[in-house]
Length: 517
Ligand SMILES: [Cu+2]
Image 1: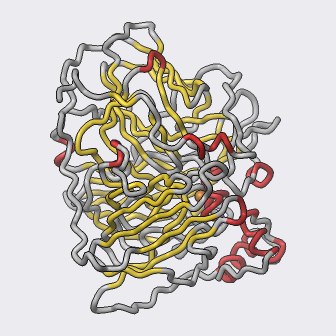
Image 2: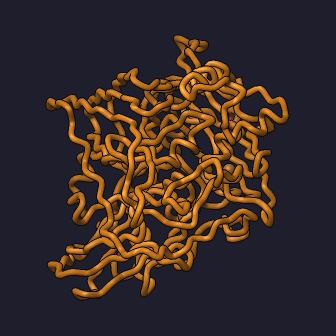
Image 3: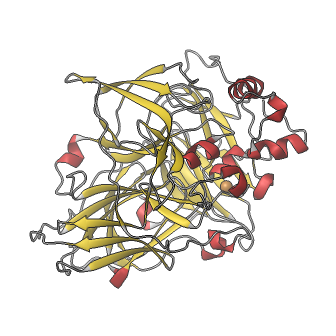
């Protein structure tokens, strides 16, 4: 099928009955009443040092103030800057040495979402705290296809708090295969990240996480893209590649463009799709990434193209002069091979996500930091069934994420996955009343978390963890963080007693006497 004859999907793929706007606590986006600003394009993180094979980076979590609205600056957190961070580029095949620094007043962690690395310390979940003023060094080799990933804080049960303050940034993996395809890749010009988030500003232009906290996911009425309110981007090329990340704590983004301009989706979480998927409506659940290419051929200098989420305009593309670019997108983008499940009789891992609000659980339990809930042998592909038991008419879509690599979606309730789910994935929206079967192989040993990526759900206990083991060390012990130690450290940092800590996601645990250790 050529680019001119392709099928175009004109509907969102998920089940409407469970969209976020059905929630009682849904916060509708509002068009901001502020002048348009040029979209912030994060700089690319400069290495401290590099050789042909090795690269050294430093990533510092820090506090700051950011001019987001006219008037008072907003108190924010970021990596190497006051909000969000520079884009971190990895080349597949190289070795990386990253110094993680914490200049915040309290502990955090650095989770490489989608990066195939050992757990639990390099992966950066709750067992890898970095304390203020005490850097941690990690070393790893990147060995995976070109993709858009992200770095975010993951200090459960404070992930929502940290990410809301701004601790998230784009990560781009490059490889030789992608580099040879005729795709836009001039960063900042025709290849840009779009980190979609939402916040509520108070009358002093500040964010108040605890006040806005919602156990079903914290949201705000103002859209921010790369930390810019009411952004525009100056288009100077006919084709534009967008690396879109749903970096929101809770919001689903249902994207479409003025004139129903077609989007050619070329990638998802784990890299390129086998072939482009053409659509006019694209929905992302929390933590998902989609890469799309827009073609502005029909537009002229002075035109504007608007990006909407539902019916709210969130960004404008201002069209300038550009050189005609008739290069068609390749019909075939990448081979998406995934190892077969060798033992068809092996038990299928079960993940049952149940409940909403404070009552969220996985397999009938809330997260226990010291508890290993499942095990899988290194290097062997096995099936996982991810079920959302919410009722289709009163429930929600839970975006399931596993640390430790990418999976291949096999089916949704026994039927084919959506057309744009045929690449590698690490996050998948599971509709209410649905079971999604995936094939998962882990390439590194360790303890890895798996959870709903509505961040207040994971903080509230819709999370579990598995150990990936080797034949040689089937019961290797990892030093895991326990909740008492974590709360004592936090209490010291916040100058209070552990029982005086305000952690909204732990209130239900406290009220019901549930032990998170
Ligand atoms: Cu959830």
